[in-house]
Length: 91
Image 1 (cartoon, rainbow, N blue to C red):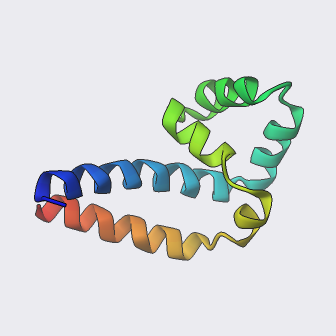
Image 2: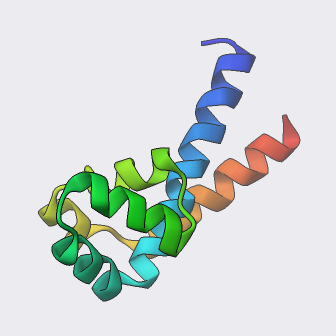
Image 3: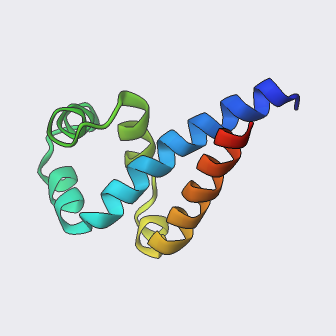
């Protein structure tokens, strides 16, 4: 993977981590939104309009399996996010 590809991957990953941090900070609201949505498309639309997530972010957080979501560690995700931001700023 060359430098351009690494940077693009880092930026894409950071975009997803931003969404995970937002969801983890509002777990109960996220679960409520998902369970009250009539379909996946409705949940994506609501996450975009009510939470300001992008299409990619909304799909990524909805694709998480519930057991994986329950086990997510906010501190670890924020650490990874900070490290990616640092690397992207340096590069």
